[in-house]
Image 1 (cartoon, rainbow, N blue to C red):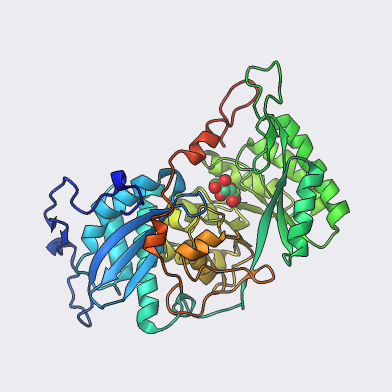
Image 2 (tube, rainbow, N blue to C red; image 1 turned 90 degrees about the horizontal axis):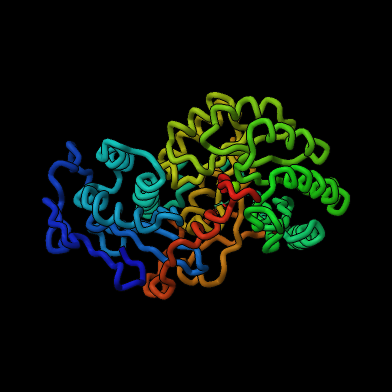
Amino acid sequence: MSTGRPDRVAPHGRGVVDAGVQDGTAQAMAETQAPWPGRDGLRITGVRAVVTAPEGVPLVVVRVDTSEPGLHGLGCATFTQRFMAVAVTVDEHVGPMLIGRHPADIEDITRMVHFSSYWRNGPVLNSALSGIDQALWDIAGKRAGMPVYELLGGRVRAAADTYLHAGGATVEETLETAGEILASGYRHVRLQVGAPGLGHYGAPGTAGGYPGRPYPDGWDVQRYLRDTPALFERARSVLGEEPGLMHDVHSRLTPKQAVALARRLEPYRLLFLEDPIAPEFYDRLPEVRAAAPMPIAAGEQLGSVTDAARLVREGGVDLLRLHVSAVGGLTPARKLVALCELAGVGTAWHSPADVSPVGAAANVALDVTTPAFQIQEGHVYGEAVHEVFPGTLRPRAGYLHPSDAPGWGIELDEVLAARYPPVTHLHERWAARVRRPDGGLEAP
Ligand SMILES: O=C(O)[C@@H](O)[C@H](O)[C@H](O)CO
Ligand SMILES: [Mg+2]
C-alpha cells in the first residue's frame, strides 16, 4: 500500500512471512492457480493498494500489474471511512493470491477471493474485491483495445444524465445554489436545507441551535419533517415545474415517519426520495415504497450482493442505488443490473466525492449499457483529482460520457498521489455528532 505516509507504508510481507510471498518478491501460490492452461503467457505479477486524498476525501484504488510491460489495470476500492483496512486486505491478504494468474479469468479470480475468507461480504472485503475486479476489467479492455462499455455489450445510450447536490443553511440559500447548478446545464438537483444545531443532512447548522436541551447541537426529527416539505414547496415556486428534484433522507426516519414525509412531498413530484430508512430496517422498505407516491431509491450502504438482490426481488426499491465497490465491483454489479432489467427496477448509482474517478467511470460504463439506468449521482472533481487521475470524467452539459480509451481510460500518477496523504476520522468526527437534542445517537 502506498499512502504517502512513510509510517504507514506497508510493502508485501511486512513482518509476516507468507508461504508464497517472501522478501517482497511476489511468487505464485500453487493453490490459487487456475486448473486450466492460460491461452497465452500473460500473468499477473503485482497487486497493491494506493490511498490518496487529493480533495481531502481518502480514496483507495488498486493497481494490478502484469508480465506484459506497461499493461496494468486500476480498480476502485474506496471505503473512505475504513481505508486502511481495505488497503491492508489488498496488500496482505488478497493480492498475493492473484500472482501468477491470467488476468482474463475475472469471474474465477473474484469468486476464489470471495470464498477464500470463508466469512465474506461486508464493505471492507468487498471494497478490496472491487479494487481487483475493476482492475481486471481495465486490463481486459486494454488487451481488447476497447472501452469497458463495449466489453459489456455496447451502449444503449450516449451518456449518463446526472444530478448535483444543493445544500444551504436556509431555503433561499439552497435554491440559489440549485439555480446555479441548473443554469450551468444540469437538469436535476438534490435539495437539502439546514437547521439549528447540527443542521439536516447535507446542509449546515448553527452551533448551539437548541439552547437548554441536553445536546444543543442536535438534530430534531419533527423539525425536519416540517422543514423538508416547506423546502420543496418553495423550490417548485422558484425553480418551476421542469427540473428533476430529489432528496436524501440519509436513513434517519422510522418507516412510519418516512411514509408521512413521502405523502407530504407528493405535490412536488420528486424524481426520487433517497434512503428513507436505515439499512437495519430494509425488510420494511416494501411497505414504505408501497405507501410512497414517488420512486424510492436505496442501497448505497449495502455491503452484500445477496442483500442487494433481495432488495430488488422483494420490492424494496424503485431505484437500486449501489456503491458499486461495496458490493464487490463491476462483476457482481452487472448481475444486479441484469436482475433490475428483468424486474423493472431502475438504477441510480452512488457517486459523490467518496468514489474514486475509476469507480465513477465504472458507474458510467454500467449506466450507458443498461436499459435499467435512470439517473446518475454526479460529483465535480477538483483539479487536484484530475492531476492525480488523468482521464477523470468531466460532465458535459450535465451528462457523463464514457471515455472511448481502452479499459476505463483513467491513469494514476503515483508521485502526485503521494502528495495527498489521507487523514483518518474525517467522516467519524461528523457521524459521532449526529444526535437528537436529547443526546441520543441517530443513524447519521
Ligand atoms: O447520497 C450521497 O451522496 C450521500 O449519502 C453520501 O454518499 C454519504 O453521506 C456518504 O458519503
Ligand atoms: Mg445518499
